Length: 215
Image 1: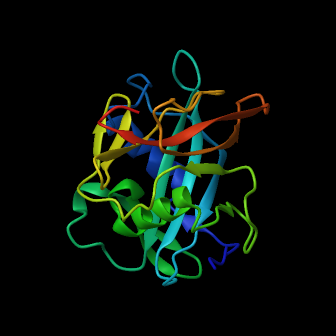
Image 2 (image 1 turned 60 degrees about the horizontal axis):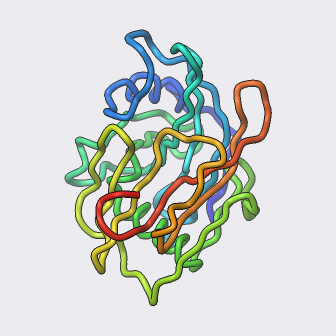
């Protein structure tokens, strides 16, 4: 069970993301720095208790219109070997000390726990409260069993793709849109809720598991 510490993180997650997001091919903002606000999210537990896993949702209001992004993050006490390209930055945690913060799509621990969530072997946890399931997060899986995700994550203008066994592909929707339907060919998915800039509730699909490279 992940323990949520009420303490500081310097620089903050939003400060780190404001620098990192414009480097992504799926970023929808302009040339200026993003103006980010938290919009929702959830966590997953690492059974080993070593890696923090958070699916953070942020909204950027700096562009022509607001854009909402899904940013899976992992927090580690030591660097992840071979993942320098996925490092968002380091920050000082008031309890845990230096934390290395990664784009979680490139972290094998997050990939394994996301697989477990899709299959129903893991429960989404509240973003800011310890030991509290997040009932807003839903999932489905119609296959016969799914091994851990394989290969390297790849960004494209529509999101992030992670190769999966059995000829499947997991696509994370990095730019979230309300009321997005699950594709009919999907064999698994994760969906959840967030808040729009005016505080209204929104809901959409976070990730889709399907055959081929689409999703």
